[in-house]
Each structure stands twice: as structure tokens, then as C-alpha cells.
Image (cartoon, rainbow, N blue to C red):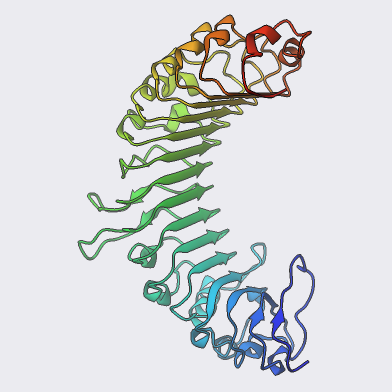
Length: 387
């Protein structure tokens, strides 16, 4: 066994790591290490292992002895590229600083590319994070940190995902130097950040100059005005738009090509007028709006629209005749819209429509049955049908 080089564990959440795994000195890959409370399955087992690739360390809440945590010696594992550090989010700690000290002790080599931190209960991220110049992706989930100061200056960071950070108020807490924050960031995901007050605590902080894709779920949008006009993709999920959507928010996104709105109420009343200014919009998805009874008429003023998806709209009662005004539309997807009775006659004239998908629409589905359906003659010219 001493010549064993690779141990890959997947779907083994309840499995304890083998005792004395540190004796496998030829080991090059260890995908999962689960910390135990007995000698032989603690972090010092990793000290002399020259590990590379991906490593996940679980049950960090068990760690009490910082000297043993430091002996994990992650800082010398120059071949390690992806690291996951996981605490049990439902566990309790006497002091948040316990987790902070453990995280500080687990400094990895600066060659690391991807870092995920899950269940961390400290308020401050580790100081070593500001030195991780090769990091391109960071995931922070179910954490209690109050700010992300070390992250904004990472020169190669391209993707940042923040989820269930209950105490986080600002993405950038302070800016001591007049430099651009998150200069290389291209994609940002925000999920369930109830205390978020804005992008930056200070005004006029330059940030996100290259941001292309943003996803926002269960967040208050009132302070999150666009900081980058080069956004190409924007997803909203579970946001009450009327109370928290800033005025003229969308009008500033001149480069937006894809917009998805899921489970957001009062949709038509708020941003419908703004959407007509999105002259580059190619794809639009609307899903989970239980109040929407008709499509906003301003949609017909988007000549660039190529794909329209409608899903989970139980009160949407019809599709408008002006749908044919969308001359560039090549794809139409309709799913779980049970009360739409029929397709508009104008769909016959949509020469560029190449794909039509209808699923979970009991009335519409029957009318579109091949040969026998009342609406079949309206869609028979469409090359790709999914009914």
C-alpha cells in the first residue's frame, strides 16, 4: 500500500479517512480528507504528502490544536490546484476566532487556482488570501464573515460566488489605495445575503471593470446599481422587484445580451418600460411569476431578440399577436403555462422561427398535435418542434 498514488473518494460523506494515511508517502492525489478527533486521522497526517490536483478537507470544526492544523503543511503543496475547506455550518463554536485561527493555519501554496470555503464562522478572512495571486475562482458559502477585503485586489480572480453570508454588508469594505477592485472579475454570483447594503462602503470606488455575468438570488437590489456597463448576462431569482429594483437600472446595461428573471413578482409593472432600451438583448427568460397575465407590450420593441422562454406562468392567459413583430426570433420555449388556450395566428408569418418547444401546457399541447391539432397548421413550417 505504500506505493499507492491516488485515492479518489466521491459521495462518501459519512466515511472517515483511513487512519495513518500519512504513511502513504507516494500518494499524489487525495480528493477527500475527513478530520477526526483521534491521532492518526488529524490534519498532521497530510504533512509529508506531496498532494496535487484537488483536495477537500471536511469537519474542520473538530480542530482544536492549531499546531496540528499548521502541520497539514498546505503551503508547501505546490501542485495543489483546487482546495475546499469545510466546516459543519450547524455546529457551534465558543468563539468565531477559533475558525479564523484554523483558516489562517491552513494557508495553501500560491499556485492554488480554485478555493471554496463552506461553513466558516469567523468574521475575518485569512490574511494569506491577499497573497493568492493565481486564484481565478472563489466560492464562499454559509459563512459569517462581515467583509471580503482581501479579495478585491487579487489580480487574476475571474469568478466569485457568495452564498448564505448572513452578516456580509459590503463586497468592498474599505479602499486604502486608489486602485480598481476586482479588476479581472468576469462573473459574480450572489445568493441570500440579507444584510447586504451595497457594493462598497465608500463612494466612488472603482470596481468590476470587466464584469460580464451576474446572478442575483434572494437579495435586496435597492443598493446594487450597475457598476459595469459591459454586462452581457444577468439572472435574477426570487427578488421582489417592485420594492427593490432601482429606477433605470436596466437602461444602463447597454451591452446586455441575456436576461433571465425567475420567481420575481410585479415584473411587468417595473422594468417593462426599461427593457426596450436593451438594443443588444438576444435571449430573454421569464419564469415563476404567478401574477403575470400577459406579456409586456414593450417586448415587441426589441428587434434583436432571438430566443424567448416562458416557464411556470400559471396565470398567463394568452400569447399576443404582436409576437410576429419579433422578426429576429428563432427560438420560442413555453413550459408549464397551463391556461394559454392557443397560439396566435401571426405565428404563421414568423419565417425565422426555427425551434418551438411546448411542454406542460395541457391546452396548448392538444391544439398543437401533429395533423389533428387545431393549431398544427400554424406551426407546421417550423423546422424543430418539441411538443
